[in-house]
Image (tube, rainbow, N blue to C red; front, side, top):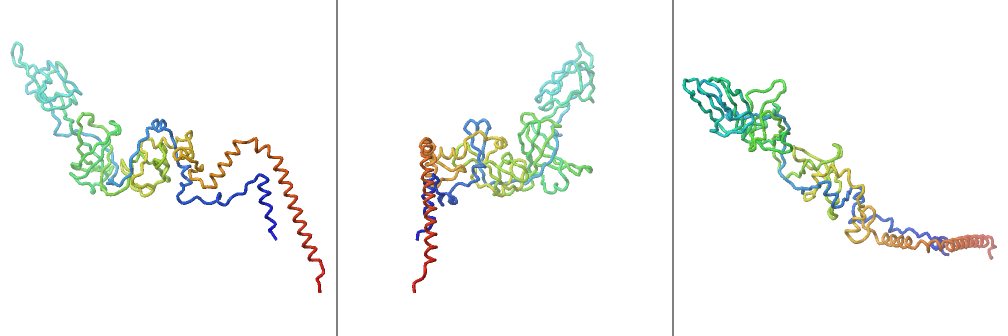
Length: 394
């Protein structure tokens, strides 16, 4: 006897309801694209990428510097400071330079009329003893001068000292002549200079628990001036083969750090990648997990990417254009059954009149099939009952 459920399949088909195939509910194959990719991918056009100023670097293993942060100041080098004075008493009759002027060694800076008799009295030229900048003037035109008076202060600023206030407990990790520091002077913007530790100060600050550490840095354009604030990243150790990225690539809050990685196949597409951080210095952050060597991570523009992508094309549309065939909304490859269903849906959408005109006929066939099924069930039930009630032959 055929199973009673057999007529249900044609009834569902005639009612216009396609049976769900097992393959449509099947799990995606292992080589399909991660279903979370759509939610974590930001797709821009070429103009959007340019507007955000996107720049990337390639992840690689490199030497990583363990360091600590310190603040300090700029000072001039003591043996590069000179004073202009007069060997004879007299009066300033000419003043050729003023505070802030750059001078060279041998330039005439002032003229002094001596007190010796004469008509006119003898005039002595005062020349600069070094090349540098006049940092302070102590004299005015016509002012009397004496040999023991300082007239002008001149400082050679081609090199300067950057003095860091180092915690006493960290001073033991530093070695004069070997320890390096990356030094940033806020007045100069984001530019970073490198200096070598020369020596420590002669005494520690009892209140702050710090000791001065002197680093020498070049100043070719005389842009660095004494008294400027300086920020130090003092290197204490260098580790090799450490995977690190620029700190500008790191986004998110401390409990959930992310970076943006360029998509491996789509142009102008960037994927949010959660990462676990290790040590950090002033320039780089160590990556414990979440990235691989060769990944392209966004540095400049990474912060703005968190607010972008709302009006761009979807991951499905981008993959369809790149591969020349359709994908699921999450970016995964369609199975054969999914492609057939999508094709049928498109065909039905393209012919809405045909579906609506077939509606009454479909309803009639479905109703008729249902009635026939009910009659069949009743007939079988009665037949079974009649058979059970018939007397058994001896």
